[in-house]
Structure formats: C-alpha cells, structure tokens
Length: 482
Image 1 (tube, one colour):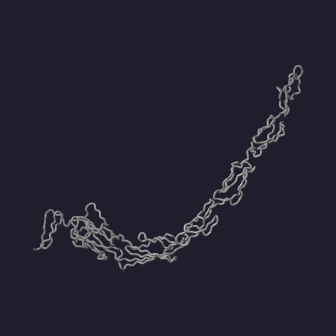
Image 2 (image 1 turned 90 degrees about the horizontal axis):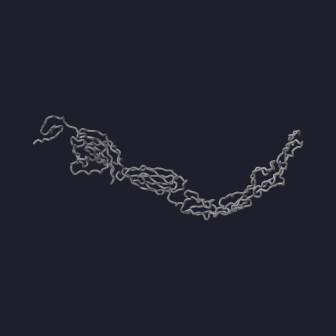
Image 3 (image 1 turned 135 degrees about the vertical axis):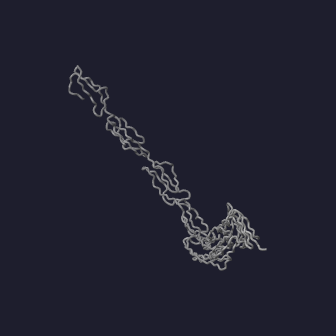
C-alpha cells in the first residue's frame, strides 16, 4: 500500500503488486467513504509467468520447467550443427516474456574436397560430417604412395590425403639417327649412331608430370668434311659451313693466287687467317678485276683443305683525268695525261664531237662506232678519233678538226659558226664484255674570224690564200699558179 496514514473522508490508498506479480484486477485505488469505510479495491496480483520458452530450429532446450522471473533456459545445437550466436541462453523477464536472443544453428559442412594433381575425385557431393571422398589417379598415371580416402570431420574439415600419382610416359621417345643407352620409368639417355655426331641440345628425355616425355633436343647430323658448301658470292667473298662441335674454335688459313691471260707479268698472291666458333662463315677478300683466282681454305685443327676457283669480271674503267677548257678556235688542241699505272684495265680512248643544237642527250654506254670507210661524218655526234691505250703512253695531244685519221676515224674540220662539245670516253674491253666512262673534255665556241665591213672587198695573191670578209662570214679560196 502507498498511503499517507490519513483516514479522513476522501483519503486514498494505492495498491501496487509486489515484484514478481502483475496486477490482474480492474483498479488499484481504495477511497475512505462518508460511512467511515474504505472502498473495496478490485486489485488482483498474480505471480508473473513466462510460460514455455521459444523453440530454436535445429537446437534442443536445457530447461528446468520453471517460468518465473529470472528462470533461465539454455539452447544446444543438435548433432551436425554448430551455433553462430554470441549467447545460447534466454532469461524470463519482469514483463513476463523470455528474452529474445539471436541464435541459430548452422549445419556443419566441409565444403568441396581439395583437388590433387593428376587425380580424379570419387565423391557423392555430400560435405556433412562422416562424408567420404576417394581419390583415383588419372589415366596415364599410377598411385606411387600415400592414402587415397578423406573423411569430413565434426570440425568441418576434410581429413588429410597423401596420395601421389606418378606419370606413365610409355616407350622412350624417338630421336632421328640416335639410339637409347639408358632407360628407366622417368629418364632416357640418347646418343648418336655411328656416322653421326651430336650437334647442340640435350641428350636426356624426362618423363614430365603431365604424363608426356619432355623430349631431348639432341640433333644428330651426318659427319661431313669440316669445310662444306664452299661458294663465292659478290665475286670477291667466300661463304662456307663449318662441320664441327659448337664449342670448338677453328682457325682457317685462306690462300688465294690470281693471274691474267692478257697480262703475263701480273701475279697476285695473298693469304688471310680467320678464327671463329661460328658454323656459318663469310669472308671478303678484295679480289682484283678481270683476274683468274685459285682459292684454298684450310681448317688447321681438322687438317682439312677445300679449294675453289673464280674469274672476276670487268669493272667500269676510271674516268679520264682532264682539265675542261673552252676554245674560240676551230682547231683546238687538247691534252691528256695518263697515270703510268698499268692496272687500270683501259683498252682504248675515243673522242666524240657533239654539235650544240638545242636539247642534247649523250649515252656514254652506247656501243663503239665502227671506223667509217669514208671521211664523211654524220651531222649528229660522231667519233673523231680513237687511240689504243698502248699507243697513248703517259701523255697525248690531239688537235680537233685537223683532217687526219686516228684509229680509222676521220678527224673532220669543225664548221665555222657552230658550237661543239668534245667528250672523251675511256673503254675497257675483255672478250665480249665492254664497260666505259666519259668526261666532258672541252667546248668549242663559234666566233667570226674577221671584222664586219659594209662593202665587199677582195684580195687575191697567186699561190696564197685569199680571204673575203662578207657579212661577218669568212670565205677561203686557194689559188693555184697555172
């Protein structure tokens, strides 16, 4: 009772249920009436009861059956399950309700079993405790050792499996021109058969974890001469293949001798040395032109010699060394100084005359023009002289237009009033081959050979030359005494 100890009319008493009890009546107040009595309070206090605890899936309750305030119920996950909650008990509260706890029981699972190399799984896809999985080696492999069964435990883990599957690689691999000298289940050693030698690569084949042979890379090649496939390219370079073990260094001695059919005194003899580990070799010798060469190569370690011959071709001759000049005379004299070097291979010199007429084109490589049978010249370019080189010596002078024959060509006089280019061509000729080079030697510029006058005049002298100057042109007569 909650009361102030006053019991006059109108005084009140409030009734509250004690702890552990709840009010079940319609009111809890009693009033002192005018009759001097307290009204009857309809309060009814009943003991608090939480009744049955809440069931949790896959869990069982540990409970003494009481449901008063402070009563406790414990939950325990069933076999094959484990709790994922922080609390596993509930208490009956003063509100007459069991505490709501976040509790659930999750089934124990080991998950998928671990995969092992080269092994198949025999498994029903069940990962609960007590489930089993068998391991079986794949095709091409066999079980070398270890156990092949695993069981899912209550801790949610598969038991350890120690199976080892070893590859079955089958027969030893085949290598061309080789034989097997040793073989077990996993290793094969090869060697080259008679008449062949090893050339690079490993001679061991290993059975790999995939069940296939990791094949040896050994190459067995036929035993050939130490110098093979000897040939000449670019006229002056050698190429050959070295038949040897790659790690060996070979020293090659190259000797070459040259002679010329057209030059009996010529003799070219030289030698070169080359040290190399390579199996493909090249060497350029700088051979002279139009020469017959005999070349020998000796592999000094192998004491083997190979030979080859070659004939070098005719090159383009060097351009003549001249000094270009311009002349205003119809009879210019040109000079050529030739080097005393007798190895320049020039056969002859030709002198061309080109009338300057508009656009001109001169082809230095055009064939030589045969000597004319007459002294008539063509109006276009023509050869005015030809000299064989052995007749030139070290110096040559030529007067253009002197009217003489040079090498069967007519050195025709130049026409007055015309401009000309003089071209010198050097020609090298050996058998059917012909090469040439050209230089511009001189230019002859047309001029008047007397002063212009306004009237005709003439002078005549017996036995001399009379010259008439008319309109800027010079006309020549020869008078013979009769």
